[in-house]
Length: 193
Image (cartoon, rainbow, N blue to C red; front, side, top):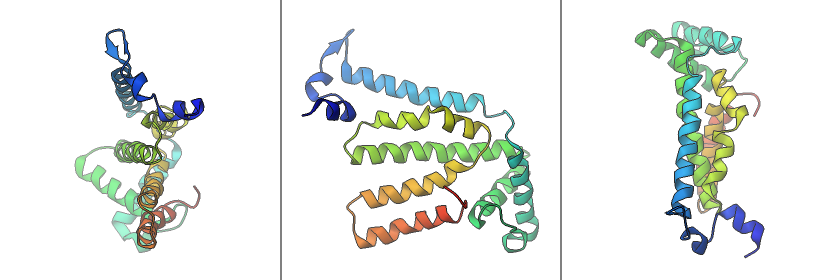
């Protein structure tokens, strides 16, 4: 096997069983991978209670408008209707729980972020690549910062990745049609990818 492909796919079986420091290399990689996952979660949680951008305040008012007037009456553009409906759900939860909209929005984003990480790992494995490549997303400063600031890109990304996972699993016309559903949801969330 060509050397660059082996690096992208991870170590060979022979390399995986060579003990280094008393622990097989494969176990060391798993421990390092789990440590990186925990680190990414910890960084997100550290910034969880930090404020967001001015957009978060705008989205809070949109969510409250959805709850007070209904989606059809409140909708005024900016982002698309499904995103407005999510803002309405977050605003309703914030009111019922006595929590801030920004914190619940970040919690919602974190759920989608973990979903994105999971879907990336699934895609990587289905492509025969090492799941560690997903750490570029999970530990990438860009993705950490947009989560910290409260941006909702992780929500739309989840539906795009869902469509890709469905398409990567035994492609067929029926599966393509089903994959169109989460992709359509993504298109009804934000005007830009």
